Structures are given as structure tokens and as C-alpha cells.
Length: 307
Image 1: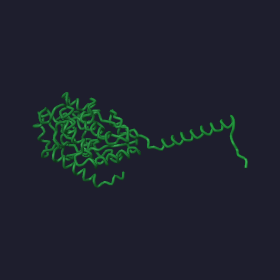
Image 2: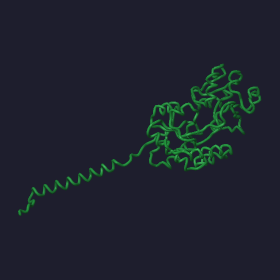
Image 3: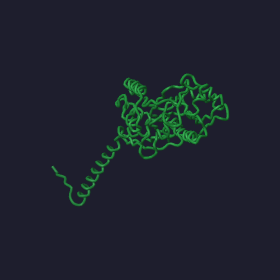
């Protein structure tokens, strides 16, 4: 039987080529293995530029900031980009078109509830009210319905300078009243943004605005209890409004909201981001508000998270 051997330069060349081929094959398999790992996804979090939501001072003290910090700690599988949103309506339009954008703090006024992926309620806040100069309160008696104010009657009267944000999505009842009576007379002012509306109120150009009391309190720098402003509920409007995390209807948005619901479920009735925010502001959680959180938590327990 003849024994075949590889000799000389030819043998060395063949052996070298074989070793090179094997090393390249191993490298190729390693690259393929690395490429099969799940990619790191990037999430763009957009923030409405209100002090109560987004502090803008690098301290992250707004409630939206607190939520974002909570998510970055508990969802490390994503890269979380913190972006200032101007104007907010443009961001919502992009979300409605299905772009992979999320808002950590989104007030559900029903206007876009069916166009976005919304988490379960994460916070409950007092709904929009009339923010009024205290010296005007005695002159509003004729518009009162119990402890509330009849907004339609007030608008039609033309007696007071009233401001609201044009095109803003207020709660359904308030939006309907504004659509019908928001152009009744020259004493009704439409601001381009919430920031402009608050500046008009602070400068004395208007006497009454329709706004969330916690936003007005923080932005105007004056407490309704100790300052120059008071807030009065609007007859027919809800007492509380739910705040959610919202994402555009994309695959990424779908996954983010699923994870947010899971986190909220694990957090318990009063999640850490709520406690931290109230403690930072030196506030106490109102018993009625605490009941709302417990109700929301009980609803989360019943969810299957099958978004």
C-alpha cells in the first residue's frame, strides 16, 4: 500500500492555506453569532416644556423627568434619549403618524387616546380648572353652581378677560364649551402655547385662565393658598384626569408600553416615582388621590399585559 505524504514547499503552502481557511471560518461563525444577539434599541423621550413636567435645569425635578429616570433605571435594555419637545402638538402629530417617539407624561384628554399606545394610568392629577385672581372671586358669584363655575355662562357674559390655548386638547367637556363659546367676544384671548398663556396671566393682561392648578401654581410661582391666585372647578368637567406614558403606534412603541405596564404593576399602589415627586415638592398625597392610585393599581393587577 502506497503512503501519501506532503513534502516541500507545496506541502507547506497547502497546510498554510488550510489553517487560514479554518481561522476565517471560525471568525465568520463568531460574527454570525454576534449578529444574532438582540440589538440595543434607542427610545426618544419627548418632554413638554412646562416646569411641572420638565424642569429644564439639569436637576430633573419635573414629574415627567421622574418617570424618565424611573424608566432608565428599570429598562436598561433600551437607550433612553431625553429630548425637549417644542411645540408639543408637533410631537403628538409625529406620534400619531406612528413614529418611534414616546412621552413619559401624557394627559389623557380623549383627543388622541385611540391614535396612540397609552399605558395604564400612572398618575391622577386634578383636572383643568379656572385659575382666577383672588380679588375677582366676589364678582364671580353669579356664575357659580355650588362650588363650581358655569364656564359657558362666564364666556358668554363677556365680563371678564379669559384666556385659553387655541387648538389645545382640553378635556372633552371643556373643549366642547370652548368650541361653542370660545369666540363670543373680544375679552376672550387665545394663546399660542401654555407658556404664553401663563405669561399673560402673570403680567396682568388677563384675569382668568383655564389650566391645571398644579401647572399654574408652579409656573406662576404663587400658591393658591398664600398667593394672588385661586383655582375653582368647572361645572361639568371631571375632577381628576389620568396621566399615562404614550408612544407612537410602532413596534417599538408597543413594546415600551408593555414594559411600562409591567413596571407599574410591580411598583405597587403608590409607585416610587410618585412618592419621590411629592416628597421633593414638599407635598402630601391627598387621601382622594391615594384612592385613585389604589384603583389604578387594582386595574393593573387584572391586566394580562397582552398589548
